[in-house]
Amino acid sequence: MSQKASNSTSSLDKGILNLNFQYSIVPSVKKERRAFIKKISMASLASALGAEIVFAGNMPKGYVPVFLEEQDSLKSMGKDPALKVLNDRPWNVETPIHLLDEKVTPAEKMFVRNNGLIPEKIETSSWTLTIRGESVNQEKSYTLDELKSKFKTHTYQLTLECGGNGRGEFYPPAEGNQWGQGAVSCAQWTGIRLKDLLDDVGIKKDAVYIGYHGADSHLSGDPGKESISRGIPIAKAMQEETLVAFQMNGKDIPLAHGYPLRLVAGGYPASVSGKWLKALSVRNKTHDGSKMESPSYRVPIEPVEPGERTPDENMRIIESMPVKSIITFPKSGAEFPLGRNLEIRGHAWAGEEEVNQVAYSIDFGSTWQSCRLEKPVNRFAWQHFQAQIKFPKKGYYEVWAMATDNKGRSQPMVVPGWNPKGYLNNACHRIAVKVS
Amino acid sequence: MREQDIRKLITAISALGLLMVVMVVAAISFVLLVQYQPETLSRWFSKTKKETTAEVAPVDEDEWTAERIEEVGLVQGEGLQLVLTNCTNCHSAKLVTQNRFTREGWIQVIQWMQDTQGFWDLGPYEEPIVDYLSTHFAPEARGRRMPLEVEWYSLE
Image (tube, rainbow over all chains, first blue to last red; front, side, top):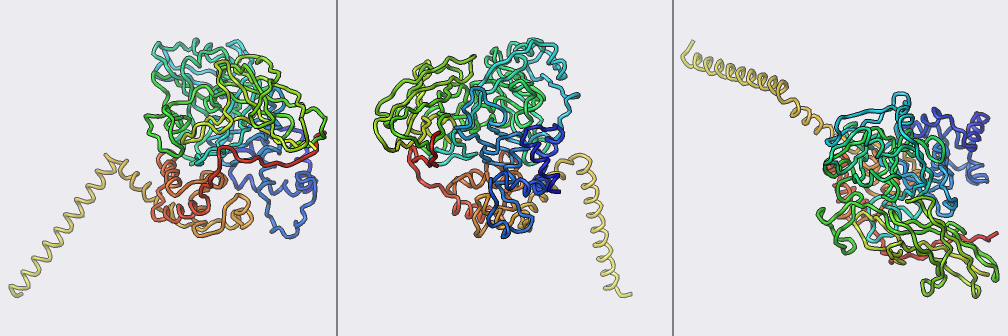
């Protein structure tokens, strides 16, 4: 059995995943998953830890530590085991910032934010996308092949950031997954323009909103409930970069990220980019699907005192995400000798806007120096910055980065305005370094 | 037969007849209800079902070992069994242990799950569950930015 187990582990390590195999593990019920994990966990103990478990003899028979289960689940999802599992039902997985160093985020380092359960069976041959709602001339369905062959294909690199990225820093605490700052990605998405599709269907003049419907199931198991059904205003739907995508980074979209079809709208909270896309509703009013209601993905119109209960009338739907940046190199905690210049690099983005400037400070904001900043490869893609830092003397430093968008708005150094669900924390990212 | 006995007999027969009439009426009403208002019945049954869900069902020992409880960040204490029974069916225990709220805050979260996520009524168990959560998962004051937690390493 151990031979068999190590084989399966090594093929997982290489990222060679038979799709059927993948489907059979990821979405299955807790117990089934555990049964599978128990089989492979002990064999992968050593590789996961890089060492023996000292008190292995004391562990109850059949007991698998939670972190090992998580690592195996991450591997079965094609994820780097260094990612942090915030929640395993539904899957919510965060990327440590230093693993976001690449210009295009690879699948294995992309954060996961799911609201429901990943669909268990995906039949691509019978998969259809239906366009319906009050504001279509007539309901129309397309097979995957029709979508791919009938329309022109486009590729854009698009920043997808969870609306709740940074929630963990709000006080009083806001309910939800306590994200650090790693719920952001910028991958290459390939698909057809949503506007081309809507043109083909024919929509009425009174259309104001597009709502999506996915194949994921509700946590409660109630088939009558959608776990999430959000959407975008019609103007956002008509942008050239808004895609009905079937590829990510040149390959089929990974299952955890919406295989086989996903609505992708960069610059907005990533929750508008509906996964496992089965239908789109063209609405003559703001879409009213699950998690469109207050307080989900909404912030106060008039700012509120921390902890204050906010009436629904004082809440608005989040559209463009705010300006933000992360230092992806070096990893926080670097020690190096005095006299050595430190190269820092990272990414900056500003929702629907462009970033004009990124600066860094090594004296807690007392003085700021400019970083070299690249233009985005396309609209709504993150931009890369880089700088060389000389330190004046030995000691502990924090390197802070601050981006400014083309409207003159900069990131705050402190956590910005409190809101009931803890969205839009775009406070400066910082890393610790020690010069010795 | 004395006159008294005859009276008793008449009373008994009429009582029996009345009972039969009541039963027939009840049966007819039931049939009518099934025929025309089936939602009412199904609502009844689903309500009874929901109430039973909020009971202290024995927790799967195999699944919730002491080690697992500790690893997901839960704390041993009064109310833990109720939390395991009622809070980890739909979502991971980690969603509970990541969060920090006051008593009022936890009640609001439960209310939100009941209003929008199909969570059942906790009945008499809401009190001990909220007690457990607000005792072990209460907010801790922190500044506008916390000191960084650092793991030092030598930069190549």
